[in-house]
Figure 1 (cartoon, rainbow, N blue to C red):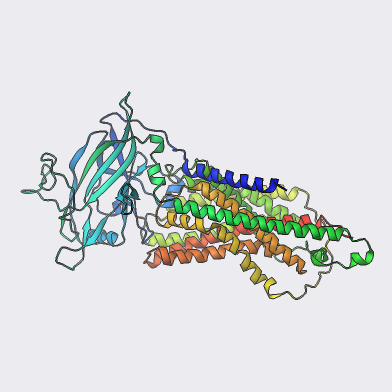
Figure 2 (figure 1 turned 90 degrees about the horizontal axis):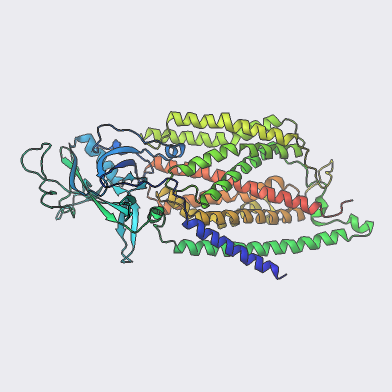
Length: 638
């Protein structure tokens, strides 16, 4: 008896250690690049992003300064789906060669250009850049802690304000960028590695003498006179016919940060003490509750099985009560068993994808430096997990004594993916209508359909063929030919009530982590605490299994043997709470005002909730399936 608590404590310690290690460790994903003094550095521009619209746009959708020729960087499938559009820029850096007040270009705004800038400023769009695979960061000093600095991704296109003594609001653009490149220098070889890329934007109405030409020197920012831009006292207003001159500075600072740790600044942006406390608190509560439920179930079942097996007389054997009474109907195939097979197979596919992805991410193989790597891995794993989806559907279908396994395979290969693809296609059409770079191109759509039809579907059929050819799973008890009448159930044992109650505990196990996931997705922050996510995923599996088993046991004790679909829906109902929480998050945390952006949010959250339903429902179903077979094979049935 003393071994139980010890094992329990050791398991908690191992989980916490794993979460700490995995949440703080990552593999860079790319090889380090060394630079000599004077080597050119390629500054790339990425999409414009806004948390108010959630619609990304390419950098050159605004009339910014352009290089002589614009070319796209190589993008993987995940980058395209994320809306990344990485292109070259007119900014010219050379390693360890500072620049002051370098003029990029001069433009005169027409009506359309001024309108575009104003719209992006109103929607609080941010400009994103990349140097040596590092995203541009804007350091902000925190007011509550003197030595603490928070880093935001990119910088705003501009800001709104008014001149002193005037109440009329104006739009101002950030047209001067002061870049800081942090380098780690090897004292022996004098080679340098980039470990930081920061910016301080300023809005400056540049001035110059005489007329504009290629050799014009600015009076507001002159490297020869050592006159630098340090504030935005004379900001550059955005209005039609206004002249805007774009300039930038570059300085290089030595840093003690090593190249392998350069992403720590981006991954450890937020205060994680609340996250630690919340996760540990959730872990302890759920594990304690799970332990209590397991103990109660084991003690009750042990008493039931002992009582049933100790019946000696024929009269006692005929007076069956509780869950033993329905042994002749408990394995009767349910209504719409074909659809149940399809959803169970799809859930196995989603479970395999989730588990492998989280494990690889927790071990550091899907680092943020590999843009789009996480989404690409999830998509490919989903495709190849079709093998297990077909196998699981066919095995269950064979147990239900079905014969047309090919029809089941077709449904398994198309029901869930077709639903998701249809919603995604409508959302993509909305994004396309807004002329956003987040719209998936036709070529990528074709690639997705190709992966689906030419790889996933055949794998589903291969798995189904293997699963259907294996011997059928034998039931531990015989099924009666005539169904038993189910007695009137108490109000708290009605299917609707027990199903809704069953989803609360699984949702409670994940809602804290769900907050951080939603924040990273919709507020454009990096999420890289996969160690925590792995622990939460394990807790989710345990809670889904246990709450389904408990409610299934009470259902069988009340002589209701329709447990097949209810076991799936009991834990699967947690997806309903997830969607409600997503709606709560939308109205309390986000500032989305555009109808299209709201439709995108709820559309994608509907896809996520549907996937969560399939995942949790399958976990609960298999737990209840194994539990039911176990208890009925443990008693003597005459």
